[in-house]
Length: 527
Image (cartoon, rainbow, N blue to C red; front, side, top):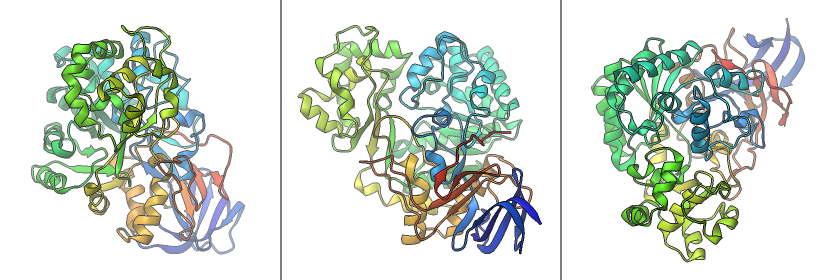
């Protein structure tokens, strides 16, 4: 037997949850041609994986990586963890299909999450225009999701009202356009604009269109934590009324959440969820303002927050929503240069970039101003708006164990590749789970952990021939040293690369070999 590439003598964990076994994998072209004991088989490239774990490449079901994959310092960050496939449009974010004016506003809104120079806001962006950016230009695979945010903006702009029948029909046609291009799910972010304004009727109608194609509904839902019942009730209602499986993004299992999942299942909802292994979240500064403060396009929000009387109205909310010792700056937008704000920027805006990594309480004390003025002026006078890390209170740390042990859980990173001090989850999640949750704390077996990262998300999202090591599957493969694998990324130094991931193959080609990046864009848009 002769292959293009051969991985020999590894401990094969095939992704299904079945026990590991010692064996070889023969690869021809982009597929696994043989798996088992392959004896004296020959190949152009041979890796001896003695003592190593050989498993499917990981599938990250919630990560803001699309534009980072096109270039820049974090282009290979997912691959260095063993991630070979990522889902696009998390939280319903995207740039298509939008007119030029709409695209400029959406690019502005999403600048917190995506540092990019590849989206030209002076031109309209069709779905095909967007996909053309990725074809042949990405080092790992991309799975499409229908982006609720750009679909709603395309039809209603930033309107704060429910859609009427004609508008829902137009959104359904755009949803169908995405599904025809291979999207696997309908993704929404119901705490972000303009998706926050969608009602149950709209969400059910669009989900029914996705269900026709065998897709699923994926929600950054309208409530978590103390508001978990509100969020789950809507999610489960969509699942039942639209006849569609539902998946909840970045959900932590505390007693209330566990009870909600049980209730939803009893009502007929087909539920899964994902979560990353850190007791801290990250999103933009704006999200913790009251919903009525976030209404409209970025200019309307800035104008509203420039008003002194409006600031007084929301001051108590801001004091409650931003604990001074648990909210950290991940990135801060550059000072705005277009002079569009209704008031002059304070002097301190010129020096804000050195805040990245600092607690919001430290910055407030340095400036000697109110927390309300700090938050509002940042949104008004900088590129829109700052990215924050929200550390959990200590009493919630223990819920990570219940989350990762839950049978409906799969792994994600929610990685955001922007700023000087981003959340380390985008650089260390998968190695961290192996080191801490498998080998040190024994929350999961090796086989359970790999399944949550591979076959389970592939099954749930309808990603065929990936997530499993078997004959005829695409050769997306990660090889790591179980004795050395660990994350190194921290909140102080988030971009430190992990250790122990030695080889990664994408569609049968080495993207990492002997721990080193192999130049080439072997990723695909998954159909």
